[in-house]
Image 1 (cartoon, rainbow, N blue to C red):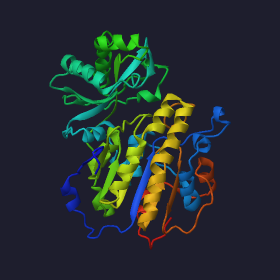
Image 2: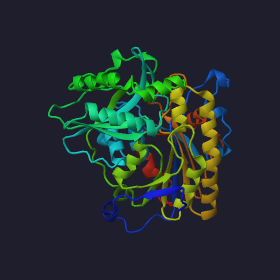
Image 3: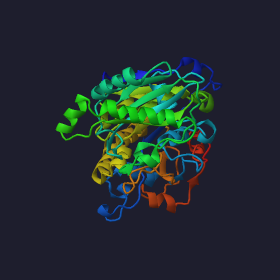
Image 4: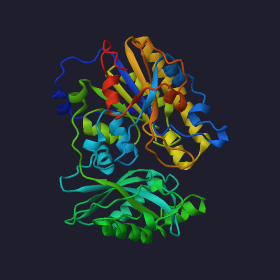
Length: 426
């Protein structure tokens, strides 16, 4: 393994319980460009970013393989990456989803007790009573750590604990006697809207609202934010609590699918799901979880992981971040970078190895026009050494819909994708 990446081993005990004695002979790789699917954009000549981007390798996968639609967001659950990523990895979110924050806690090594509730704690930017930035200008981890430490000292106690994360993404764990079952709005779903109608509501909401309101008085006057304002950057002048939940119960991946696997990802959510189901996590230097990330490093790490694993999963957050920003060019650029530095090299490496399958699909759409997630089906394309019925179509949303192939509920797709070469079920 190169010095630029590191493997975090999952609990070996999870793997030892696997009832399957033989590993898969086929190499299976999934590439997930988060939020890549979209709707037609006027600036792109009424094309989607997938239609406008130069992505010859993704198109090759679709042209030579199967193409269709899959829905990873059940109608009963919010259309977020937390729900969708569980489905992508073959878990039915209607049975196991408890919230986003406890999954991220697993990535950070935070043990959530059976009576504790974890919440995602964003550092955000508010202007008067309007939320203008869900990421506080993508505040640096170094700056954020200082602010989270302040929150911990001033607002933390035996019932409230703050845990610093990466960039604007942090956690709060509640250990108090009062039950909190409040409904919370993700901040990226309310950009440029008044915060009042979106404050937590329901049982225990007043606890969360008080913390959020008190945070403004602590963060707004901090010298870090004075400097950020002087530099023309958005200040981190409030926290936003959301994604709350208790620790989920997830069966080990090896028990369900009979193979060891590794995940290449930069965001705590995906790393947390991996850790929760016993998949090893590969961290890549320079992989940020933002638009600017180490695409080539992720691609190379995934290729090298094929020497040790039969299942490799690569997640790239950049298209989703561009969608939340409403940045058309950044989304197109991210798709092209994923195609060039990840899908292309992986496809070459797999073809040189022999028996393989490669699946490319987003988890959910993040349309540029609304700057948030929607629960629409997404296109998927997969090719492989055993695929004999090529679609003959490029990888786009419209082409995927035109094939008539659809997988719903979405969590079934992984089991079908991992079937042996003799079982042509897709």
